[in-house]
Structure formats: structure tokens, C-alpha cells
Length: 357
Image (cartoon, rainbow, N blue to C red; front, top):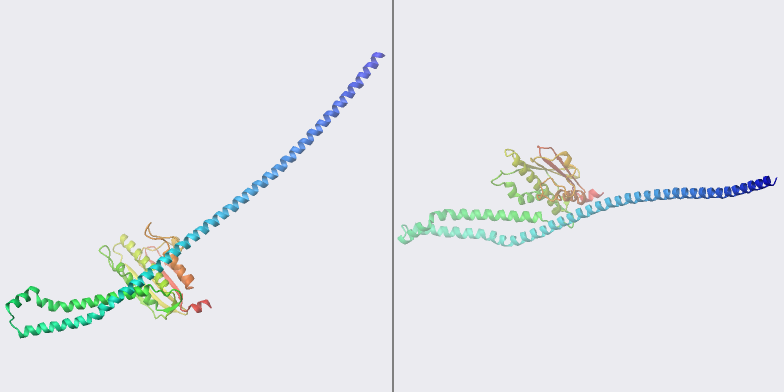
């Protein structure tokens, strides 16, 4: 009996111990579960945070890329504007220089041209006197006869009038060139003035005369003029002449390049002008090699050029487009076919006041 009681007591004690251990284990399990839940919650929270950080980084990256592109475009625009300003300043400085040179040449030139007539009269009188001496003293003294033969007097008397005539033609040619330089450099760009566009075209052709005339390596480039009846046009004459210079200069370069490939092909530049409604049209065509359709859309972009490296800045047509479209509210377009040449068409309002209304 005592043994059984002892056994029961031990069993109850063991049960209590087990229950105690079970409670401890249960608490440990609860704590582990709580810790696990906390860890899971932290993991989920950290995952969300990490995802948000990644999204923020991607957004920041996208913003930085967009800002980088915007800065690159802005830098390109600034460079283009800077180059245009430099080119415009160069043309303005060139205009001032040309106008100054033309003015300085004009003074002594006027003196020479004004005195050529007097010189011709004086020499004619001297020639008359020589002829009179020959008539009155015939035969002349031996010493005079020897001098006549030494200096070839008969040849001199025939050639002196021809020399004077040639000098007169040369001076007139210089006067035309000086006038063309003055017209081309027109320093009235601060305001619109009514001008004769044909005068500007002819001044530009005069300046390009040597390039048009050719050289031992290539023949002369023919210029075909089809001028219509144009009214005076309100414009910045100097800037417009710059456009003519760019387009005609490019036309000459295209013809020379084509001639190097096909020597038998004649070089021609056609200039047509006409007035329709409130606008005037100037069309300049060349017989060069033409421009592909893919490149035509880029012609007026800054720094784009079809010329070899070192032969062009890519600013001429870009500045010309700005002058026609922005400064004169006109249009500048290009049409070209490979192996059939290129045509530039300029459209300008006759009156800038009408263009604004």
C-alpha cells in the first residue's frame, strides 16, 4: 500500500513536471511563433521598402536621363546659336570691311577715271602735233629719223589710243566691281528697305565672277537669267545677298564636283524671278549631281553638310533658312534629283507690313 502511494505520488509529480515543461515549451513555441511572425513582417516591410527604393531609383534614373537629353539638346542649340552668331558677326565684319575697301578704292578710282578723258585729249593733241611735224619736216633730219625707228614711232602712234581705250575699259570694270561690292555689303540691315533684288543677284554674280569663269582644269559655268518684272521688295538687302551667295556658291561647288566625275557634262546655273500676288519668287537651279531624298530633309539643319570634311561648316543653308523664314517671313525649299541637279526656291513677301497682317 505504501509502495502504491509512493508510486502515485511520483506519477503525479512527474505529470506536474511534464505539465510545467509543456507550459515552458508552449511559451517558447509562442515566442518563436511571435518572433517568426515579426521576422516575416519585417521581411515583408523590408521588401516593400526595397521595392519602393528600387522604384524611386528607376524614376530618378529616368528623370536624370530625360534631363541629360534636355541638356544635350540645349547644349546643341547653344552651340548652333553660337556658331550662327559667329558666322553672322563674320559676315557683318566682312560687310563693313568690304564697304570700307570699296569706299577707299572709289576715291582714287574716281580721280583716275575723271582724268583719263583729259589724258586722252592731251595725247591726241600731241599725236596731231607729231603728225604736223612729220608733214612739215619731211624728210626729217638723220638723227630724228634714227630716233623714230628706234622707238617705233608709227607703232606708238597707233597703239597709244588703244592703250588708253583699254585703260578706260579696265577702270569701268573696276567701278562696276566696286559698285557690286558696295551693293553686296549693304549696311542697312537695321531696318527693312525697298530694294531691287536683281541688283543683289547681279552683285553676287559679279563677286563670283572668277569662280564662274572657270580655269584650266574646267570650262566656264553658264549663267542663264530669266528675270521677270519685279517690284521693289522690302527686305534686309545685306542678309538677302548673303543667302544668294550661299546658294550660288553651293551651286558652283556642286557643278565642279560633278564635272570631276563627268567632264563632258556642261555646267549651268539658271536664275528665274517672278512676282505672283503678294510674293516674289527666286528660283536658282544647277546642273550638279543632285542630293538624295534622305539628305534633303537635313539640308537646313545646323552643322549638316554634304561637302567633304574641311570643305564646309554646315551653317550656310541653316543661316539662309533663318534669314528667309525668320527675318523675312518667307519660305526656302529645296528640290533635287540625283544626276539631275538641285533647285532652291525662295519666296519672300513684297511688303513685310502685309506679311505681318
